[in-house]
Image (cartoon, rainbow, N blue to C red; front, top):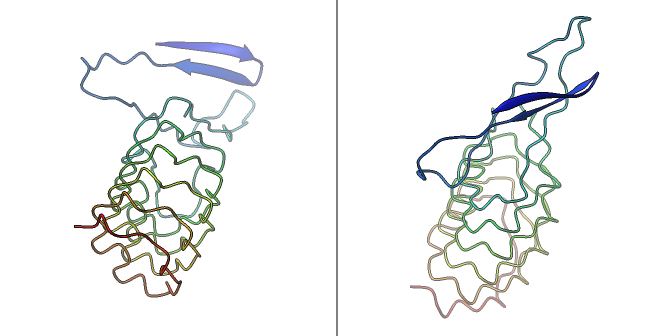
Amino acid sequence: GSFTRVNESQYTIMVTPSLGGMHANVAITVAANTFTDSVGNANTVITKNTTKLEDLKRQVDIDGSGSDTDLTNWNVSHASNAFDAFYKAYHFNQNIGKWDVSNMISARRMFKEATAFNQDISSWDVSKMTTARWMFGEATAFNQDIGNWEVSKLTTARWMFYEATAFNQNLGSWDISSLT
């Protein structure tokens, strides 16, 4: 890897992992305000290149404090798996409604126990999704209108809304003929 000075206030860290093909994605977490320069300025801007992110599984490191990295503009258009993406992210409630999830196949436990999450994701294209098991399980604040989602390819949706106590939306137009 390398550590390169961009200008007097910015640096680029490039990491070249040698994982022997064992991982498709590598996440690097930098603790904001942990490092200071010679005059006492703390690092405050953390970014993550998500242009080729193919798997959201445990890519989102939510610490429960509510001071999470801004995910609003993440490019997840290549992601096919969101298993556990926000699992137990108790304070997570960011606007991710503009995410392109059109290639998402599995959203298993995506928002499970994300007890504060209640954002409008009605425009998501979930037409390729086959697995939504526990997707909103115990997401006790979630109550958004997702009745227009195209879910005809869903084969597994068991416990999708288990203990999602606030959820009270009409899903009567969903084609659930593929569920097993």
